[in-house]
Image: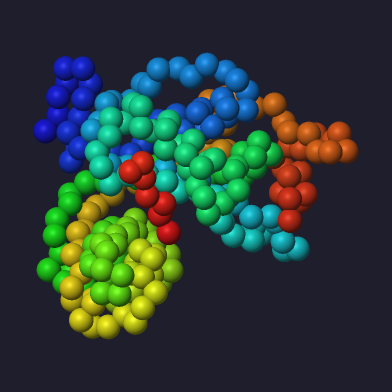
Length: 244
């Protein structure tokens, strides 16, 4: 169900796209350059969302990158208007994720931005009532030790990337919620589990450059040498939720 008047789209029809990732890169880069943000050109959507930043690793002796590591992931399970929330969470993810140091300017050429728009929420009938790689999970339960409610979420890709099965994923979520006691079958069966789907789009800085046809001022190393995208590979060996 789409409203063409005013460019608003129902959250169930929301689709992540390169335009959303480009807007996140714009927001991040403008922090360093001081440029003025342009108005969003993508449709307005009211939905929950997450923005994550990952960084490509250095090149090893075989000329291959050594992997990708997370630099931040922050979002909300409550619906927000995308035009304002996307910039908000792009910057929170880059600078306010308490698990990581803030992203620095010289890391920008190695970043990959991923935008996830959440939709199709439904209650699960049990620990195995969801599809790995397709569904994200939210758990909520009463901590039997502290007598307080705990909750946590994983986006759909987390279980797949870590090669967890259903029970391993749920157990990891229980730990993520802050529960440190014994995880019994009784505790697992007491969980209130909500599953959801995501529209996901990932976009690298190289993709961004090709689309935007401009580049931020290359960062300068302490010795005064300019770092470009190629040389850096060899030189660099709210209610909100943080994912993973």
